[in-house]
Length: 474
Image 1 (cartoon, rainbow, N blue to C red):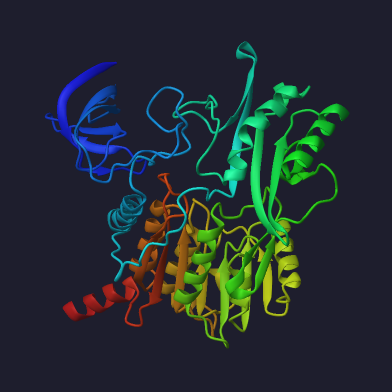
Image 2 (cartoon, rainbow, N blue to C red; image 1 turned 180 degrees about the vertical axis):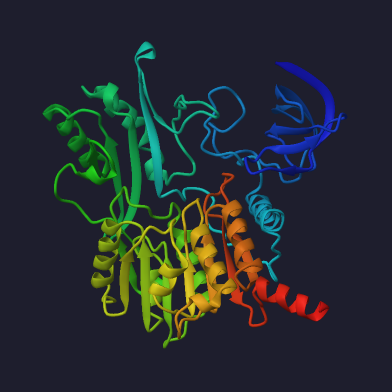
């Protein structure tokens, strides 16, 4: 490891919240802890032919957006928690940078420029994390147990006494959980505790899912029950995969979250995928549906529907909604949620591998004027490619089938959104009319976003354009 005394001017932040600068040789330098506009010296830890990487060592000109981190476990020092990367940057600047990341990805990866940028969706910046996966490690040499996120760039668990992005009542459980695990016979075989918070009639419901690699003894189960009674939580046990999760005792309030604007309540299991930030999810669903602008007589398809987070609110507005998801078990859960909310007559569901869609699959599900697309990080490439193929070869679509007039695409990965946007705009006959960032994970480098695509009535398939050009030349 060497120390470079050159003063560098930080130009931007990358997707990992590292400052980006260029040294005197023209090499790109990635700097942990540095912010745009600052002049810094770097302790370089990695050198390659075209780039270097290191950590902030000295600061001469400080950014006006630099703030004091809210958590004592945040930092560049050894053992610092790796759960957050941007606590040293003002929250308003964080979302501005995420918006720029979205714009840059759309342009550089997809050659797409939205006609307008939406105002970012923002919410609480502390205590927002209603879902978390905490690692557990019994450190026998030190006679202690650690419960928390991993250290920065390490497989070790950070020594955390509290966490400011967790709700205060969950943060306050970290030390009692350490003591609980230390008292258990199976403490060396308990690698993980997952936190999931729902809303019940009497307030918040806090579920803790204990991953255990061997059956628990009666004494250990009793210790969990005593902890639950003292701290007002419910324990779920997970002996193997997520499908094996079950309540320690078959009783307790149900986990659910509400979408009050639409009168919808969504029950879920603690290992189900639900949004980390319930406040932002409420705003996100409302904005997505306003952008989709569904009319009462219209049919809508919700691709990657999950538990029905968008499907059920859509069913309160549309004539009919079809939700499509990759898992038959998840589809069944969605049907149950629709029935519970009195929407089964308007919301139907189908199971399909959404990463292997073909044009024939798409037309099989029938026409719909509006689509809602909410894929995982991998994006919706097969879906966008199938639409593009149908646009290039419209004769392959059955009579009466038409592509959607509007698509709202909700993304958790700006790179795959940009890739799919490029297909939709350049090959499938759409315009990107709007896009904007969603700050689902404050203080992290995670970028959530949404984009709106409108069918372009003047879009001509590329093959037709070539033929027309050839005919004109002739």
